[in-house]
Amino acid sequence: MQPQEFVQKWRAVQVKEKSGYQEHFFDLCALLGAKTPIQEDPKGTFYLFEAGARKQQGGQGWADVWRKGSFAIEYKGKRANLDKAYEQLLQYRESLENPPLLMVSDMDRIVIHTNFTNTVKQVFEFTLDDLLDAKKLSLLKNIFDNPEAFKAKTTTEQVTKEAAAEFAKLAQLLARYEKDKTPHEIAHFLIRVLFCLFAEDVELLPKGMFSRLVKQVGHNATAFSAQLRVLFQAMAAGGYFGSDAIRHFNGSLFDNDTVIPLGSDALAILQKVSKLDWSSIEPAIL
Image 1: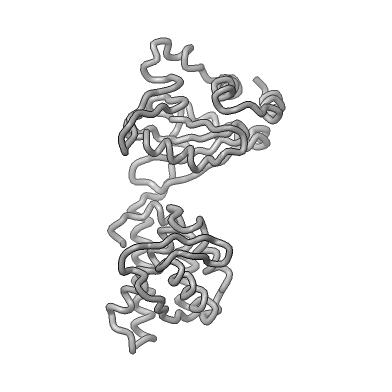
Image 2 (image 1 turned 90 degrees about the vertical axis):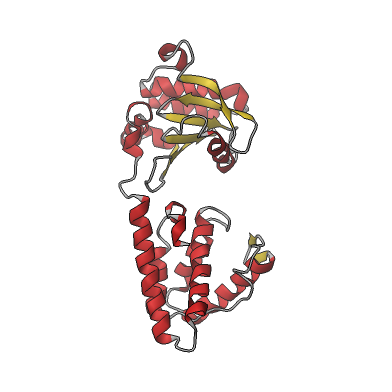
């Protein structure tokens, strides 16, 4: 199947997931020059549709497509929430022997989440238009025979060390300039900031919200302190930060809205660490 043919066909399709996902996958195999499940595995032992899987939280589920050692795919209907589809795959992955690629699709988009051990997670998205690009199509072909092509070169240990080093610099700056603050007060504040970075990357906070705040204020320390205080208040009780709904976070971490002012050098460090993938950072740093 030629890319133009695939794109033209699936751009027009409006059927629901169950009516279209197997044909979409057959066409994807034809596009990528790969065998279908029946062609490669007639007995259905390592490559099949509706692969049974036990959920991590209990109960039975089925991955729409599974190929041992390569990928698991969860399909949804057009314009569906693919984050929810990914959450389903996370429940199945251990039962499916932790495939290196966790893929979701609404037949308009194909999104690949990497699932390699001890490496930074990466996300690759392919739209229908992307499939007309020879380089992007060539990358997608690796899902069958070379999943390692999607593997990040940076390990979680490396990212964790970088984050820890930058926060150590931040702690030193605060200790130097905020002499009226105790080490406990400084540590408590930094843990809050660190938690915000982690929370936005695992979507306990709206994705990217804290990083956008850091970027928007630039070196305006007064603006950052004022906005951060509002965010801490919302996290303590639940509420809104701008137009974003913020859930209530239990415990003593946000028991008050105290903010330690940050200078331009400290804000520069925050801008740097906000670009890291905090979902890949080892929990020990918390």
